[in-house]
Length: 162
Length: 371
Image 1 (tube, each protein chain N blue to C red):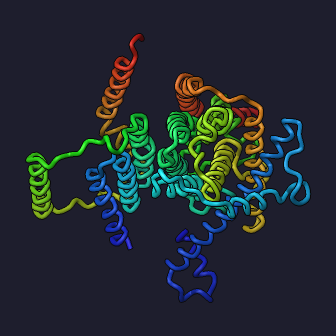
Image 2 (cartoon, rainbow over the protein chains, first blue to last red; image 1 turned 30 degrees about the vertical axis):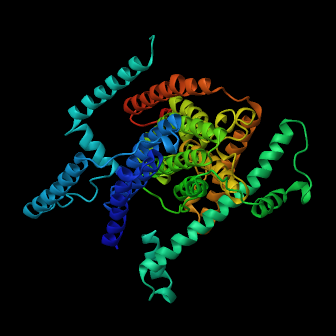
Image 3 (cartoon, each protein chain N blue to C red; image 1 turned 180 degrees about the vertical axis):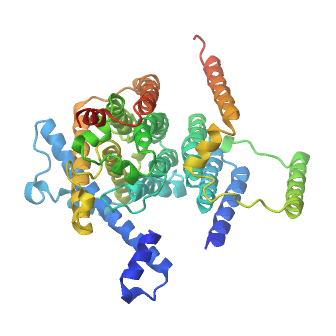
């Protein structure tokens, strides 16, 4: 049962991601991004990482993409004014790079066996909390300072007078 | 669910030959059907009660034509909504316009799955219960934005944007205000949170009376959650006097009914979460419902849980018809400048309390002094 579900949700995630970069209207891209994020959350659930799945949905689908959509609605560009992307050499290079990446990862996974999940509950609340507050404490705290700096920067940019 | 199915298969010899996953699937479908029936009934009767409460507060009678005391009004309304012409505006984005109400309804209905209705009455007691509710609620935002954008109407667009800004802002205080209950129980599962509030202290075992900070966080949660469900005094997304009806202005018939049902579903989810996290959930004061035989224990705890939750729903309706609507900037200021800092201070206070008094609340401390 699990492999079948993995293939289904993996296909949805990859298909959604392709739609994100190929749609012309930014609104369609944003909505496909939500679909992709939900599919990835489903993959987390399949690995018993329920906590990570919930966080994924709350933070990304519930907040980040909603802000994207918010901005898209605020600007609200009419369909006929959307820019048309031309096929250039850069696009060809992109396809080439993507092909190389796929080839490379295929070779790498053949050489080094796929890491098996070390513990069944690696994505549970307890495991994530323990990892964050012991092994990765410094990175965790530094990230919070970084985010604070970003918030203050955004306010300084947006406000004329503080 | 699977453990329950296994015990059912072993208990009833008649279905011993049926594969386990069929039994599990059947039970899942059955519990979903029961919850759906409950949500629909609540939406219908809730609309009647809402209008009666509005009538009482505004010194008029309210619905009184269909059936005794107007009790069957919701059936008439439902039939009307079903039979109405289903209009899709010519310039609307057809696919998204059709999809949006279902997303909103699914987001609100999916939260019912983890609600602890009784001692053993939870469709699925997920170990991330509280976070699960917050995660599926984010579907509602996406649906509302979709509805506002797909309608191709200024009022709908404005309403959708206001709703998104509001829900994203109020998600933070809601999450932070509910954390004290999670800290005390040491678990995100709603059943564990309810179980942590039992014991011999009666209503003083509730998280509401655990310590001053939890008392305060109940009110913070209730305020922020009412804002997250877009209800008056926080209903700027559909402010009738400015936006006609906001993001659902172009919807009619059954699609409108879905938005309407989702709103009532959200209302119940908020009341049920507040009950489970702060008001002792299904615990009967000074009585152990768990000790009764399974059937009676479940029925009693279900009744107690529903009474508490419905009382909170009534309070929400009362607030809804009493206070005037906030302005957009006031609403944002309320969330970011008052509720968010207060919930953070509160969370810190609860954490310190749990550290200093080793997880004991005021009632437990007093009890240990006396006894």
